Length: 196
Image 1 (cartoon, helix red, strand yellow):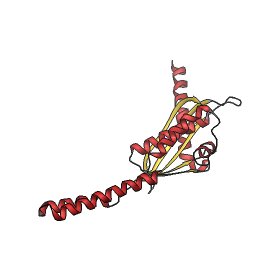
Image 2 (cartoon, one colour):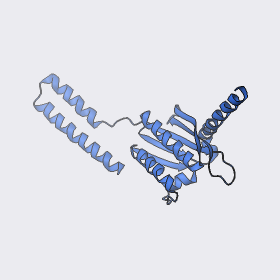
Image 3 (cartoon, helix red, strand yellow):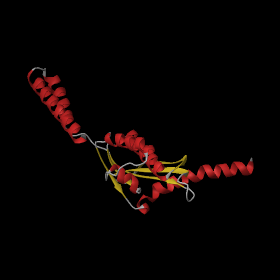
Image 4 (tube, one colour):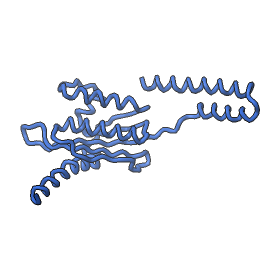
């Protein structure tokens, strides 16, 4: 679907460029011809695409038998050359690991879109996320359906994307940001309780 939209966009730009060229070479005065030809060339030449890699992680510290606990999200967005474009690390309250993973991914994708990224390679360490989004796993938990749908809608806004499941050690930076996001509110609450 994305490739089809892109092909239509390119085809319409080429048609418009050819039309401008024919008008410019036949009907316009000399100075205007140059402007029209330059506009036509700008329509034909490929757009520069910002490519980036996004690592995301969601973490929930929960007790055995209780699927929810204090949770945090982390996301690291880097350019093709490895330059840091943006990062996220914050608490999201009490939830499950899977919900935290989806929140980290959606916030990371939104950050990438805000920064002008149009081609993204996503790295996650969650087998559930990669299963739902790439491998076609059935979504069993109803509360995850809106998160999966929102994630798919965000991914569709990129001209191209990939999602790869990686080992946690490869995702260490985003994992550390997620853990720091959990620890900061706990440290602040402890400090307030001791000084309060």
